[in-house]
Picture 1 (cartoon, rainbow, N blue to C red):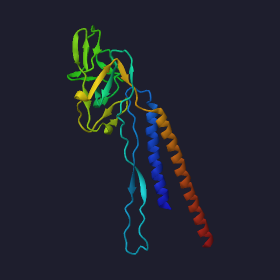
Picture 2 (tube, rainbow, N blue to C red):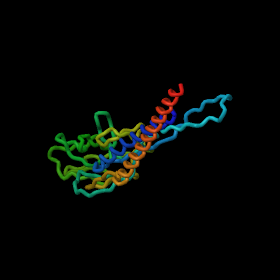
Picture 3 (cartoon, helix red, strand yellow):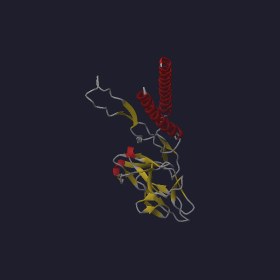
Picture 4 (cartoon, rainbow, N blue to C red):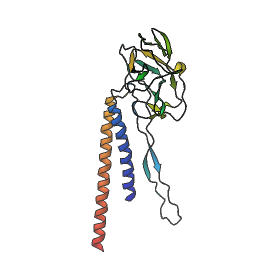
Length: 246
């Protein structure tokens, strides 16, 4: 009976984590370049006791464990904005930005020029070019970004945006503000990625799918909770009967 309660609890913990993932996905339906996450569950078989004196064969007990929350790196829809500082990343690439914690990676191509002349994201992170941050002078105008990442103004070329890729992009770690960190070093994206100027990649979250997942999680959680309640009631009833016999 205790095993059944523990198995049910392990399922509830896993469902609680999946609910957090779904809530975060739904909260970022409108976030530029956002990538959804999904939940993976795995079966953990409890090590079985072994003894020749057991009258019957041991029965395996399977618990539910969190198998991770991989990043869905499929492309989101591209929307034309006409803003010369907007770029949509196409393919498997990521833009490189400088944060207080070091270089991070993003698919959000909504950019602007800050008061110091740096090309930054909407969260204020400098966007990195091949030679460092892209910086403009106070009198420069007519800024444009080409499909290969080359940044120009009326004063000439100002650098080329770095586009990188990863062998296992689904393993990227979210750090908030729509940026990611990676355990492995990235490699230049090359022909695996390009930019579409004057456009933005929207979130790849599918609201209908996420709402369906949400209802499934709620039903599963309620079902497990009811099962645990019945097991607890059975335990109380058994103890009460045993007390009466005693």
